[in-house]
Structure formats: C-alpha cells, structure tokens
Amino acid sequence: MARCSSFATDTGCEEFFLALRTPPDCDLASGLKALEADYTSLLGRTGLSDETLVFSRLYVSDFVNQQERFLSSELTQRLKAGGALSIVEQKPVGGGMLSLLSYRIRTRMHHAGGSQGHYPADDLSNASVYQGKNYSLLLTANFTDNTEFDAYTQTGAIFKNLNTCIEQCGMRLFDNTIRTWIFVRDIDNHYKNMVRARREYFTAQGLTDQTRYLASTGIEGGCQYPERIVSVDSLSIGGLQPGQIVRMEALTHLSPTINYGVTFERGLRVRFGDRSHLYISGTASINNKSEVMFPGDVANQTRRTFENLRALLAAHDATLKDMVYIILYIRNFHEWTVVQDVIREEIDANLPIISVEAKVCRPAWLFELEGVAIIPDRNEYPAFC
Image 1 (cartoon, rainbow, N blue to C red):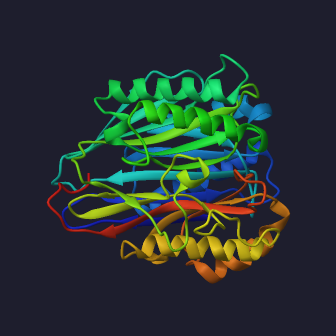
Image 2 (image 1 turned 90 degrees about the vertical axis):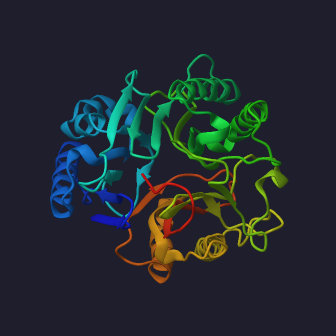
C-alpha cells in the first residue's frame, strides 16, 4: 500500500505526505526491499526528489531485536541522509511488519528553495532543520535518556536536551514548538510519571493553561533500548509572529486536558499567509466531562473519536476532507477488522493512513487517532514556507 496527499497554493510551496506499508507475510529483509521499491516508485510518480525530504518515521514490529538490520539498511540510510528520521517500535496492522510516514516540501522554481541542516546525533537521536524562504522547520527524532530507569527522570532530561537543541536553532520552546510525539514503553505503568515531569518542565518554561501547551500524542511505543522508557519526537517552527499559533478546542465534545491533570492542547492551528496547518493531538473516545465513552466497545469508541475530530475541525471551518494524513492507534490488533469497517465509513479511501497496535494512555481507551489537516487561509503573515 502506498498513498500520497498534497497541498499547494499560488503563493506558497507544495507539501506532500506519504504513507506506505509492506505486504503481509514478508520477512524483514524482503520487507525492507519492498518498502524501498514502493517508496522509490511513489517518488517517481509524484515527481519528488530525495532533496524534498523533511521528516520520516518508520514503524517496526521488533526494533529491539532487529535494530542492526534496520539501521544498516539502504532505506534507513537513505532516509537519514535527508531529513530527521524517527524509528518507533509499534506493530503495524493491516499489512506487513513495516510502515513508513514521510513528509516532504517542494518549492516552486521562482522561490528560494529550502535547505537542510543536520545536527549531531548518536545512533538513535537526530535533528534536522529545513530552512525555507519565510520559516524554518526543526524536526527532532528519538530523543531519549538512560541516566535512570524511571519515566519521571528520563522525561525531564529529554525535555531539557530538547530545549537545548531548540535554542541552538534560534528558537524557544514557548514561542516556536508546536508538537511532540511521546512514546512510552509499558504506558499503563509509566504514563503518570511522564505526565508529572512534563507538567513541571512546561510550567518552568511558561507553558500553562493560561498561555498554551503543545499539541501532542502520548502513546505506547519503544525504541531500540529496553531500558529507555520514553522517546520524544518534536516539531518547532522558526519565524513565527505573535498570533500565528491558535488553540483548537471543542468544548461541547472534549474537556480541556488540564481538567484531568495532563498538559497538552487538543490541537494547535498555525496560521500562515496562504494556509493553516491544523495539528490534531492524540484524540480518543472522551466527552466534555473527561469520561471515557463506550467502554469495551471498539466500534463505537472509533465512531466517537471521529465525532470529536470533526468537532475540532469544524471550529476552524475544516472537515475530514482537509486531513492530509491520519495515524490510527489500536490497543488490540485483533480488533482491526472492526475498526477498519468504521474507518471505511468515515474517511476517503485514498487518504494516507498509518495503522499500528499501541496502548493508549487510559487502559479503557481501545482506539486513538491523530493527524494533520491543511486549509487555505488569507492573512497578514508570510506564506508557507
């Protein structure tokens, strides 16, 4: 499976979102070859060069035991040579053992082209800056810490290191960071300590319920080292002016997250002169009283989650048709067929989708989704990118 969506305007650049997965019953070696072949073919059909790459994430079934083959593969080396590369241990569902999400930017010939800058990385963490005409995009991937086997300690250290990287790129967490993806090993036991450390760090940086938080997904996932409980990816955008970042809420459907002690936004809208990016955080079957809806019923939880997503989008005159990709998280992969039936009712069959098995932050939640929508916009800010 290989799908691609795109968005462009007369005054800005063209953005592409690619989602690919390997066929069922492939072993790792043949899966990596098949994924690279499909990736190359999709780039060819869309006219995209390797130089357009900004960020990629590989979803793999068993990173701990297969890390050497992943890290040395031609596909991984090719992705690392472009933008930032995240690799997360989350079992893909609905296909083979590998899935790939890729984000790319193509500028028009008469515009100044973007350029990439890479930052020192160990064998796991890495960061890349895309420098456009009006904005810069900092993508970080697989930031971890192994000083102590404790989610609270690791999370605090990760955000400290992340903030250092952001500041080295001339940005600030408060002014420029838009989104995080936080992968937590054994989330049922470690999520609370991650949440506590994040809340304390955000408060120290001025991110509160009176200012704003970040869009975020906190989900079960692992890196190549079992002792590293928490792994963080992030997006920051340089060149933003006051007013360009807007909170997304749907108070008729979803309570503010601070009501149950967590510190992230339901979504953030970033307004550019020609478009708006709508970053949808991890969203599940919840109501405006912070209660889990439809416990034990994955089909109705999936429907309620899409209802919540539509409410978040509607507040900004957007619909599901404006989504450029969606990631689906399923607690039990045996329920994928039920979830898939609902998905067919809700979204276009050609939308890029990544589907993985991953536990959500509350055990009663059987399904979660996240994604990005892009809509046209007109305002005084410079066009993207």
